[in-house]
Length: 548
Image (cartoon, rainbow, N blue to C red; front, top):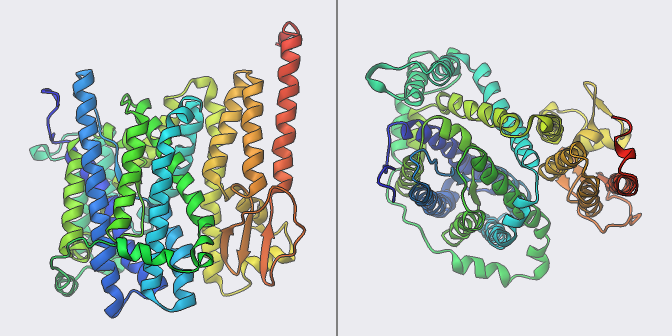
């Protein structure tokens, strides 16, 4: 370790509170969603508190300690004292997708929470194996992908699923969220010092917690009571991690059709996690911290495998947010502290107790600020000429956020379902937005963001053959359903994987299906156009500049 690189600095507290709140939010979702969708309530809640949460704690500890150690290694190698560890925690998209499309369908079919839990373990293990195998090719992919393509994708996700979500939460509950946001912006934008040298993130959290307790629930929007704290305290105890390898083996004793069908969810989510982690490593490099791609990705996969082997159904991943944590002044200590704190919570049953004392809304301004920094970095850390490419990469992610809002609105509307509207008119409008196009752009948005931004970069640089190659890759992904294809049953939007040629088979009753072969043709036609222009450039190099 570098002698000039301490184990912990005071500004690590700011990063810790932000990362801690982010991880805490994911953990608080687990008992809520598993209870609602998988029957893990009452006497069946032990699947959550005895297996899933302790398993998640082990994976969070392993990953955070590794990335803290990695930061120390980089500091020792470079002699720098400003290295910031990669943030790490539960993968939110995988958590939501695995509950909705793996665990909940099994529970609905069998009525058995254990069966749902076992299939979730399989999904988590599969995701980890895909991430581990992807580590061998991730470095090559990173070297051949423009930085604008990687960072614009992160920026789009940051706007739609970090900054926007928390911005809406802050403005929805301003009495708890607005003043902590002002405190945080004062500390981080104006760099105003607080009494006793307290970190701005800690002051913001204290202010929000005080507002949640002192204001009536009608004003604050949160319900914090002493009785609630007492009730939550009863869940405390010792919950050691339990080996789940035997439960995983039991899944493979089932008929193959019972679990192979979920590969259509597991494989794309594993690829999603590879690309997302790759983008986050590139984001760290843009901030000056060049971590080796292979080991970083491998540790990510091993952490997810550990989660599955010890009972968690939910992959862990390198988080979005490194530039934000580094701008806060965090180093490696925030990662170590987060791993130790989250593991202690997971193994002692204090998750609900913390949620009953500290309103999650009090910590949301910290994560909101991280989203702002990520979005700004996408433009600041790329050549100014590539700014239009960064902007292009934002649209699929924004469509993903809009699709989520539309789907949620239909779920609570009580009127026509989304599939009925689409079956009636594939050009249906929702407040001026084409629903069909919105959902098509949302499916595989993380791939689409990267591809269209890369195409734009190579066109800006007049590298037409490279632009053609990326367009052809987009055509392949669209042809097989990894991008743009979808099916809607009721108000549930799902992927639709299919052969790369039209089958002509009708959709099942009550299901709207869209196979994106026409978009695949569009990408392919664009690739051919770029090839033709590149060929023209080679045979007539003087003519290429005639119009300039």
